[in-house]
Image (cartoon, rainbow, N blue to C red; front, side):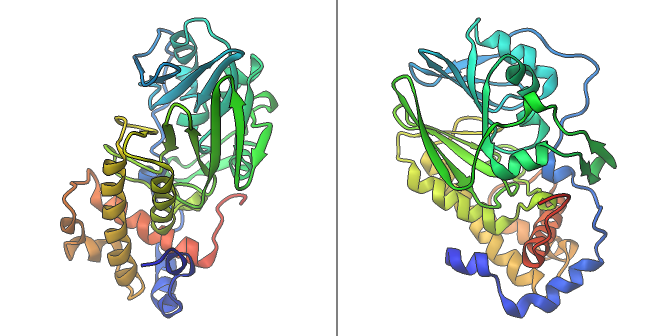
Length: 318
């Protein structure tokens, strides 16, 4: 199915999608944000690191991945980890100062270190919608709680809507919007000279792919975003997801093909009024080789995401 078809959807599906409105809006979103458990104490010891290139280092376990580019005037970070890992991320930088920080989206396991690095003078970059989420209190249905807005020094101060480019020493950094893939504010960050591509939670080689439909993420957007990422990458590109191992272009292509198949099947069934449980019982998830930890949760979020996209539901603020 063409990108324009996915973004336009099917007018004939209105009846089936309307039926989804009967599903409680504030149902569990555990499969969407996959928020880490709130910890009792912060971690301070350095985290495991892996050199991807001469200039680019991967920091793992924060709880997800953080990418650090060493430049003459300081470090460029992609994502800052959860708040309880901020000191550990800093310790992993061996005394280097963070000058620039990119947030791939608003979830707290990617933005929890903003307060520390922002207070120390880092310039924070993000999509304008990510800043909107971080700048206001928002509700997490899965936990029936509100998350407070970040303080001013932790908010992105450089925002964009489509794409941009900057230099950090000898490295050219390209960044761009991935429309409605995991949230409504996802971005990629491409260290072009080092050929390292950070894709946030738009790719998910280990965890069940999730769609924060409450914030605009949906399966059609994920497929479109993966198509955009594949155009950027070549066979030598190191593709870094928010969680899990570094991927090759071939691995990203395989995940994209799986997502496209599931998009086609679930859209067809959802617009005919089938529920997530109906699709699970029909064996839709058995049509792909990958085994999901919680296939019902994935299908539930897919259904909600399709309905939310079709009705232009925007969650708390967007």
